[in-house]
Image (tube, rainbow, N blue to C red; front, side):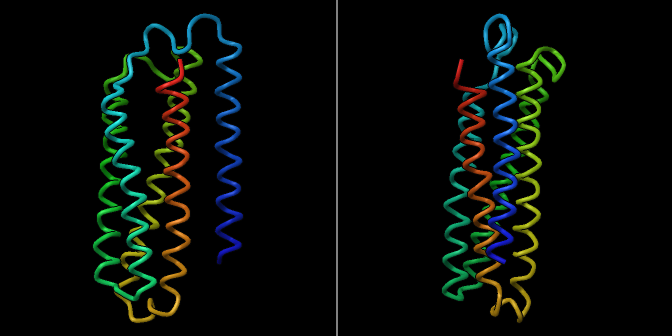
Length: 176
């Protein structure tokens, strides 16, 4: 299971590296300022969402620690908090999209922004689903046997998507 998780996360890393390469190529080839003048991102909202996502790495780590100790009640609490933080992040990102004055077809920046934040959001949704499955499985008696290893694998994925967000946030929101 560990090797499979490493291979999966590695393939996801290559996917996001390709997206970053495309974005930096678009930026290098783009005429005019990057981002364009019509791009007005809600940096305070994005900072709050980033803080929530970073906090979710702390809570999922606490859940993994509880799983290692066999403390299933604490595991469930921290897992539920992590799921809630992920849902708030995705909802906040969706809200931000509704407020933007540019689209995916407006310019190369729009293409990069919507593609990268959209794929990242899909990965967060996938992580929420995986965390939810682990949370549900934690109520079954057999969970005590393989549960901690499963929690570790889902935790590794969650940390990965959190780190990817930091790179996405830095590249799209902060670099100009």
